[in-house]
Image (cartoon, rainbow, N blue to C red; front, side, top):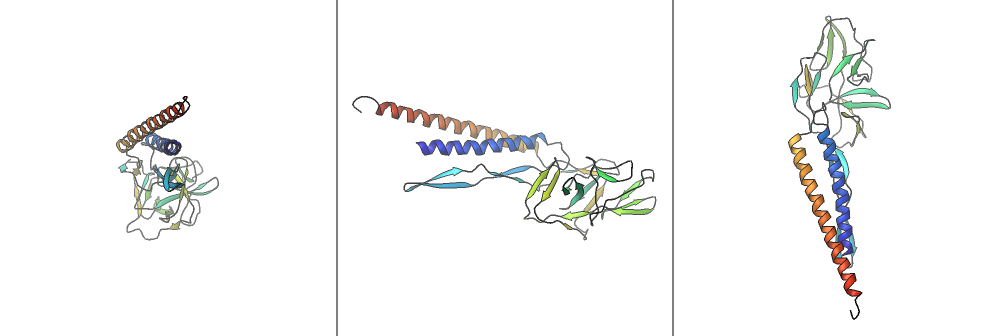
Length: 242
């Protein structure tokens, strides 16, 4: 009976983390280029005599790479990434990668993310435009043209598929393996005047939230039933003549 209590408790810990993850995904359904969190669960086996007992681990959060829908914004400084590439910007502690292509020009001419971080080219250098230089044209390759002059090129990077991602802010990630600059734009590139939406599907996430909530309630009922059975057994064994 005690094993059932511990198994139920481990399941509740895992489900609580799952509920927190889904709730965060739901909260970011309108965040540009947001990547959902998914939880990777494992089973821990414990030998109780000759019978194995399976416990749920709390689970590890993994950032999904599933992209959101691309919609037209009409803003010439907005770029959506086509394919699997990432835009890079200089964060406080190093390079951060994002697919949120809502860009802006700072008063000093620096090309920045919507959060104010400098966007970099494929070599890691910052890009500077003329704030009064007229309309900006951004090619599929990321090449920026202003007043018929090519100013610079937005870097597009590939993050290895087996790299673990750590979240930075709402839409940024930092990989544990080096990203490489993309030079072939036949499949990957930029689309000017478009923005990528959140990767979170609101209906799917709400369905998951309901299912996880019900599973948590069911596990709670199982624990209460096990506790009641254990108390009855103790009470019975404590009676005279038992």
